[in-house]
Length: 341
Image 1: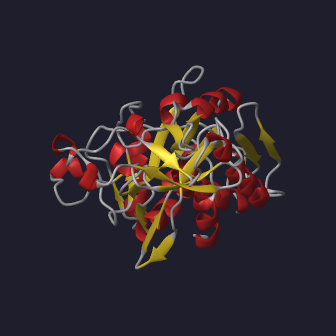
Image 2 (image 1 turned 180 degrees about the vertical axis):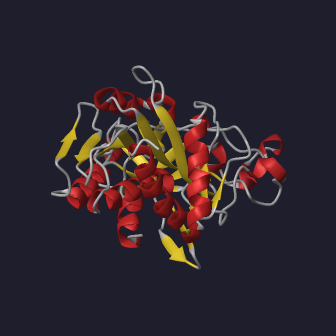
Image 3 (image 1 turned 60 degrees about the horizontal axis):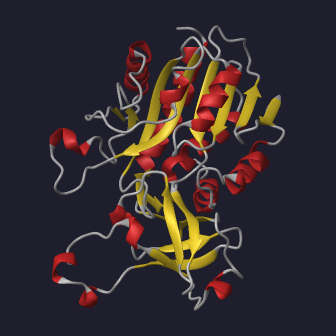
């Protein structure tokens, strides 16, 4: 696993609809590594790479470039910025967080009143996003407008940490998936394969809808990060999956019932190759598979994910063990599917 590249991908700013910085990194990495690389009208990167053999199944491997974040909706007279969330972010993950705004990466902090100014009924409650603003230190609207425009994107300003076998960062969902695709494209493939780095997954699977229609695959593998709730207070199936438990292969989520043969195939490969693997124990969430498997006349689809604590926050946590398991399992699974096994 190219940890340096993963760090660059995670640090890049790219909320849904503003993925250019991420796209530029990917394009620079895969240049000259495939027969066809194009950007569609939505901003997806669509890649075709020839392998040693022609496949029996036209296979698409997909990951999304975008991350959750914020968009500036108003600049107030006092210089503070109103904003809304882009993608699903819990209120608890927002207030008092540092953010970077726009192409110039203007620093700001999500403003909330200090605890000693709260009314009794407000204490202990998480404020709604509607009640928050971003403070960039400007005193007036005119001063703020020198640095920020309405419609600017904002992302969590987060450190990237890699130690003790764990990675902590924003945007692991789904820059890790992008890394998996990049490394496959750079290597020799056993069969011809198609790849899609998709936009706008976090706001409704929009990029993958277009990518799947264009490529028209028979089968698809979606590479993702998925919620791990293995923390104090979560018991049994509510843990969903475990950090350190291996790659996550889902049987169902809120948008997809996955192909049962491919599901069994993934576990068969993992068992034969001694790859740690697990399944989600709760039907929750969703990903680009929700759009891909319904494209045209239907696409046989499987999702392979890295378990991720604190997803959609400034401090997502994943394990090296799980990341390596995904990176080992996916190429083997892709070969079996493309071969028509």
